Length: 372
Ligand code: UD1
Image (cartoon, rainbow, N blue to C red; front, side):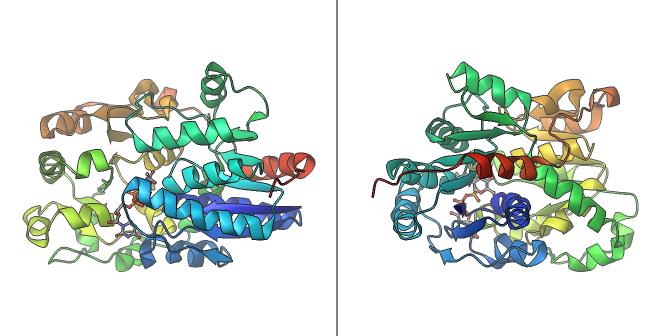
C-alpha cells in the first residue's frame, strides 16, 4: 500500500509528523509531497528538522500568489506526481490552499482521499479556509474529524459514510512535545528568540510572565486600521507581549511601526517546540489563529480570539476562549476582564492516539482502481 501525503503550510508539517511516525510503525510506504506554499526557513524547514520529518520526495516550490493562481499551480504539480506515483490513497490535512489543490486533483484522478481534520465549520463562507475545507470534505472518501462537532456538521451536509472521530492529530504531537518542552529552562528559550525590535528580550522582561500573540489572518492584516487597533491594545497590556511575526504581517507593518509598540516583543516566527513553550507558560493568548487557540485550549491557557467566529466551537464554553473584534477597547476589555470558568475545560479533542487509529482504518480499507 502506498500513500501520498500533501503538505504545504506550517500546521500541516506538525500534523504530518505524527502521521508519518505511525505509517512507519505499520510499514506503509509514504511519499511526501510539499507544495512549497510556505518556503521561508522558519516557516518550513525548521519543522522538518525539529520534528524529524523526512525530506519530501517532491517539493513543487509554488510559493506565494493569488489564491487561484497558487492553487492552480499546485494542482498541475500534484497531478504529475499522482500519475507517476499511483498511490492507493492521498492524505490531506486541514484547510489550506494546499489541501484544496490536493483534494480537487486526487478526486479528478479518482484516487481515494483521506481528509484529516475534517468536518470543521466556522459558518462564514467568505473565509478561504471554510471554502477549502468544504470542498475537501465533500471530495474525500474518508473524513477524520477532530471532535464530535465535526461528525455532526458533516452529517448536516449529508456526509455520513466513513466518518471517524478519533480526536485531533495535532493533539498527538502536542502531548508528545509538551514533555520535550519541559526539559529546557526560560533562559534557553529566550536565547532562541530572534528579536525584530531594536532592543532584545531578557529574563527580567519576562520574570512576571507574558502574553503570547500571533496575528496573520488576511481579514486582520490587510486592513491597516484593524492591525493598528490590535497592536494598540497589545501595547497597553499589563505584561509584555511576545509576538512572532508571520511574514504576511511583517510585510504590512514597517520597522518604524515595530519600534513604536514598546510593550510588544516582535520576533521572527518560532519553531513548534518554542511556540509550545511560550504559549503554555503565557498568562493569556491573543491570536487570530484557529490552530493556536485550539492548542491553547488543550493546554488550558485562556485565549482571546480576534475573529468573527472559529470552527473550534468547544473552546468557547465557559469563556475558555472568547471572540473579540479587531478593536482596541474590545480586545482590552476581553483580555483584562473575562475570567474563564475552569470547570468547563474538557478533553474533547482526543487522547493523542488519532494517528494510530487513522492509519489502522487506511490500512484495512484503501484499495483503488486508477482511471489514468
Ligand atoms: C496559510 C493558510 C492558513 C494557515 C496558515 C498557517 C491558506 C488559505 N491559508 O495562511 O489557513 O493558518 O497558512 O501559517 O492556505 N509568506 C512568506 N513566506 C512564507 C510563507 C508566506 O513570505 O514562507 C508570505 C507571503 O507574502 C504570502 C503570505 O505570507 O503571500 C501569506 O502566505 P499564504 O501561504 O498564502 O497564507 P498564510 O497566511 O500563511
